Image (tube, rainbow, N blue to C red):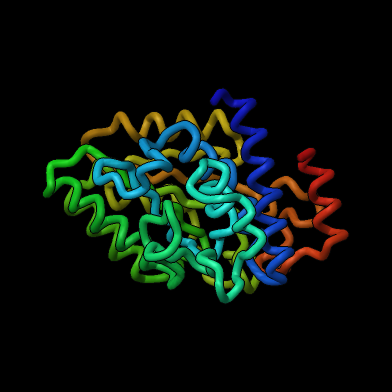
Length: 270
């Protein structure tokens, strides 16, 4: 897909994620929308995957460390053909395989069960090391939330990744500036994440994470680095694409009403 096609796909994924959350009456729209461009590029442009063979041992892996943003991941997987899109409307229902956090045992296309913040990146590091030990060529991607990096376990994982020089690992930070209780600076400030990641010895790239071309370019550069792991600091807007959700902390974990969903659909031009 070219940039324009990817942008259209990302808008569709945003709407389908919101529709799923509305049907469930619960979920996390803000962080789902902020990372939609990143995850669209990964699944439709970058990653070596095949929906017909979701367990291919040589496939690229993607670990959603910020597991609560799974509505966007589910919408992406459905758009990519891993399962029927009608399943999205059953999000968080007791008999659905689409639960409030990713479940690798029941959901096609999910590479790691996540939700407890900090654990996803740790698992991604282990998967990347396993690829090296098994002499496999697959790459591993993980998407972190900026509120998530308050967790000490994240920094332990970063030390692990650099110690083993996991050049097949790409970490994407969804840096939207907000978390459940307020701004990052108010809750637990992590000033200048670019400098912090660089101090660990990573290849660090800072981009506009809601610009498709920038995301493509950064992920392409990460693939070419064979000497060290890469962190992409993707500056994004929480609730991106829906005016009344953008930069509003209240939309971290609140379901839209049917009227709000209709307005979002209009703004996203789906």
